[in-house]
Image (tube, rainbow, N blue to C red; front, side, top):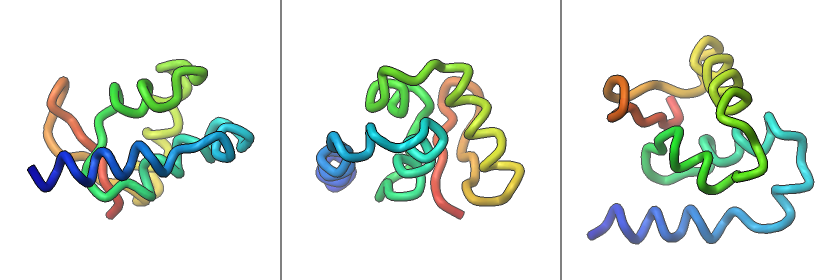
Length: 82
């Protein structure tokens, strides 16, 4: 129940102002400001104008830089701030 509240709150924080930012900043904002771990598909739902390839590249860079950590594997993978 608690996770659902945080997810709903996360979704409300993504408003029109974030869409004016460059794509890499939009993806970073979703990941870094999320209260709960986020999956790639959730990011794609929140940012439908950004391609899956772009999201994957940005997430790989963030993992490499140590900004986020991966929880789980394959389809169950979620990402959160380190």
